[in-house]
Image (cartoon, rainbow, N blue to C red):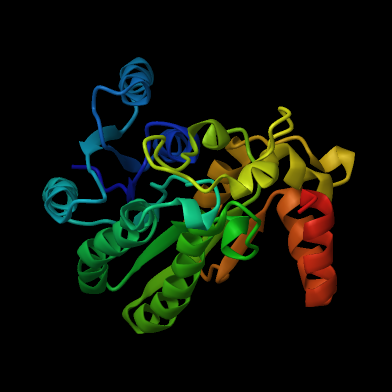
Length: 289
């Protein structure tokens, strides 16, 4: 069998994962694109493109919130090629709303995917990479891993945890030839905002936050963009993130983190330059809270 580099990507039914899977497969890598549901629209589209273009791509059913699902999926990949060169931990979602209004179970579910899901995948793949004495783990974080905006507290805390874990893993795995890096996107056209979740509607929520949440159709997602100059408010092309992930996979010594998106760079610079009290004043001014 022809020797190909092998990549395993989680969360490939849409967004960055979907585009990244196609980028690697079209680049000649044997690509394991994992999805929770093989019957999802995105999974079916990937399968059709694979057949049409004869791509070296295989769909794997992996639910990162389940240890057994992760182990079975990784074993399927390893049994076919005996190696995994790159792991892209992309699967994730975002809760949106006041921290107080979420149940503890909802917060746990955020961490099950965004944090423990990454840990399950890493713990399953790292021993394989150690044996190979090489490998790259690319964790998809967010600008929210660096800056916490109001109403994104639960989501941002999960990404902040991912940042810390990635930094530790980068140090701990380096002697084994394993590189660990973070990708921190700003706003891109992935449908993430449409897919974000609020607190369960059957729960009783504190109405004290109605003003913060917005009642006039000017939702908080638009409100936070008042931080940005007009030319930075439009979400970017997600293909740029997929292209970056592919470039990182071929970089001998990748950086610890890659911030991508003009809005992300602007906000990160602004947060660094402003004193804490001025940043907080600006938040209150923008959110009128």
